[in-house]
Structures are given as structure tokens and as C-alpha cells.
Image 1: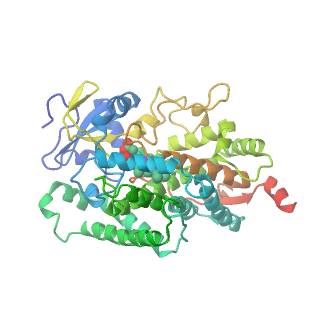
Image 2: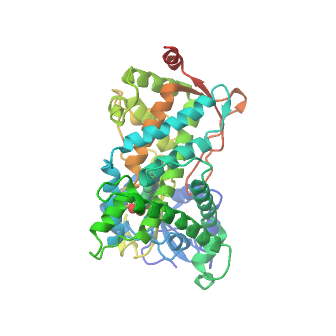
Image 3: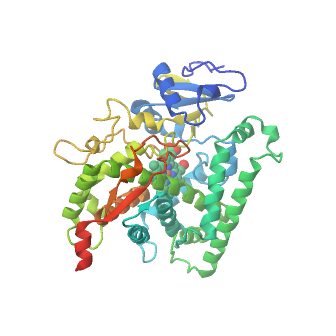
Length: 473
Ligand code: HEM
């Protein structure tokens, strides 16, 4: 039964709740249908658990910004939170999450770490992407592994001060474990784990996910041991060193900083920062290839702004309104994390006049905001004009929320935005990306998962004429 004054929604079945109202393959269309039927704030039963789905910018702002703390929890005692215990993404709202979030934001922001800034680390990694593309000139390339590699290595550079070849065991095992775990977490065994607590210790298929986490933890522990042996206290080389310095400072102040926490923390950051960025890049290049005039206009702006400069810098974005508009439009249309990460009400609260008891599961439908009619000039088409005013200046509408909003908003936003800008500008400056003649009509329908990704596609790469001249000189 719905609690008193709870948001409306479809009638639930015993045990299953409203699970039959949602397609497990891609529930996005069902969420939209329910929004049209019940309004911007409605409820569902995921099995026996009541959940509230938030849609549209007005309700999203009231929950995530005006009543921020009330909505900043994460559901606990479910499969994914048990799996990533001590991590960051699914940690419940409280002092330990706060301390770790503050530390991570500060470390990522002041990445003055030793000699190499964040920007240099990203630009360094891009050279490997450029090499891959140079080798593919004149042939057809599937870019998935290349972008995944780039995103993974950038976060590894930040966390561990090192990059890994794609066939390196560390990355291979970590990627495989997280892939398997995402599949288990989205499947029926995780659901059973959530609804039937007495089976949690039985040797059922969900146990494989816990084994995978142990494997990853062992690998991360190896890196931490190596860092402890080679670090110079007070002179951090990377995120791991910064945390070890923090541990020295806080050795007995009763804080939540500890080595066990560090292990899950870095694994979480790697996971959160890899598929998100690489799937956004994949969507970006799919649209750039199939909207060649947009690609050309980006290249003209890049050439004009950078002229003879060797390399782009992040500051150059201020002189590239069109490029900025294109990247933001790519993020809007990519809708990479469509249902955000589930939240939970930290206390009894209200939203748009409805009452929500403490512990209610909160699902943010970011998709509904990124396509909301009335918020965008062209809500349902790829069009960079969504981010340009009539003077051609870059503007960011308040409905741009691919990183969510409020206290739980993506912690890696700064890093992700820097990556997207530096990678897209560097690659567009050097290459033309062409939709292969025999590839048929592009299919923009995304593949549903924790993150959305485009269907696999191939690209043709050409060195730009300006770059051919440079190489001859
Ligand atoms: C285009 C790339 C990215 C997108 C679209 C994205 C999107 C998101 C979204 C929607 C959330 C959930 C926010 C909420 O619950 O309200 C989130 C959380 C998070 N993201 Fe990202 N993200 C991206 C890249 C990154 C990167 C590169 C990192 C690594 C540093 C990262 C680390 C995190 C973390 C740690 C959280 C959990 C924050 C918390 O619970 O306090 N993300 N992200």
C-alpha cells in the first residue's frame, strides 16, 4: 500500500510490485509513459520497495537543490551497496561520505600534484589515441576500445600516476570484473538478493560478483603497497599518494580515513570515470560524423582559435563558443547516465506537495530533464543551437543536468569536462571523421545499461589537409 499522500502511480502486484510495468531491457520508454499518465512526480514499487521517480527540471531542482540534504542519501542493504561497501558512489549520506567527497574534490581540483597537472596528464594520454588513429588512416576503425582505453588510462594517471596497456593484466581483470558485476547487478539474481535477505549467504550466482570485488581489491592493494614503498611523504605524485599523506595527518583523529576505504575508493573512481566518459565520446563522434557540417564548423573555430599553437589548453574553451555548444549538446543527447545513481530520502520530507517517508528510494529521470519541452529550443534533435544565444555566444540552460545536481552531483564533473574538451578538440584539429559509405543509415538508438552507449559503429579517419601541410614542412 502507498503511504498517505504518497505520489500516485500504477497499482502494484503482490511481491513483484510494478516490475511488470518496466521493460528490463530498456525501461526509459516506460518511465516516459508513466510520467505522461501520473505527472512529474510519481511512484512505483520495485518488488516490495516503494520508489519515487522525479521528472522535469522543476521537481528535480526542488529535490536536489532546495531540499538537497533530504534527498542526498543512497539506498543501503541492497545488492549494489553491499557489493561496494566502503566505496564512494553508493556511500550513504553522513560524515564519512562528506569527508571523502571533500578530500576527493580538493585533490582533483588542486591537481598541482608534483610536476604534472591534470591537463598535462590528459594531453599526454591523448597522444596514444592520436597514434592509434594515425595507424588507421585510410582504413575503417571501431573506436570503442580506443575511447575506453583513453578514459581508463586518464583516470589511472590521476589515481596511480601510471597508464596501462590494454592487454595489461591489471586493466584487463578490472574491466572484466566490472563488466560481469554490472551484468549481475542488472539481472534477476541481484533482485532476489534485495527482496529475499535469507538467501544472501547461499552459494548462488550473485556470489561471483563478491568474488570479483575481492579480485579487484587484491590488485589495488598491490598498487597501494608499491606506492607506500616508493612515496616521499608530503610530495604526492598522484591521488593514492595524497590519500596516504592524509592518512599520516589523521592517524589518530578518529576520522574515517583508512587503507581499506582507500582501496574501494579508487576502484569506485575508476569505474565511475571510465564508461561514462568513453560512452559520451562514442556518442559525440557518431554525431560529428553524421552531421559533417557541425564537424566542419568545429574545425574552422579550432583552426581560427589555435592558429599556430602546438597544443590546445583547457583555457582555450573561453574562445570557442561553438565547440563548447557542440560538446554540451553531445552530453545532452548522449544522456549517458539516464537514471543517475539511485538516491534515498534521509528523513520524512515533501516534494511538489506529496509526502515521502524517510528511506524512500528516489529515482532521478535525468532523461526527462535533458529532453524537456519548454526548456530547449530543439528538445528532440541534435542541434548545438540549444547552447547558443542569438549573438552566437555559449549559454548553458538550467536544464543541462547530465551530471545531476545538488550535493551528490558527479564528483568527476571537472575532470570529465576537461577530458571531453581536450580530446575532442585535439582529434578534430588533426583528423576528419567520416561515416563509412557502406555503413548504411546511422542508428542513434542507444543501448540501455547503467550507462547508455551507442550501438557499435565504425569510423573512417583522414588526416586533415592543414595537418598534411604541417607534416610536409
Ligand atoms: C561524461 C562523464 C560523466 C557523467 C555523465 C557522469 C555522471 C554522473 C552522475 C549522473 C552521477 C550521479 C549523481 C547523483 O547521484 O546525483 C555521478 C556520480 C559520480 N561520479 Fe560521475 N559522471 C561522469 C564522469 C565521472 C568521472 C570522470 C569521475 C571520476 C572522477 C566520476 C565520479 C563520480 C563519483 C565518485 C560519483 C558519486 C558522487 C557521490 O555519490 O557523492 N564521474 N556521475
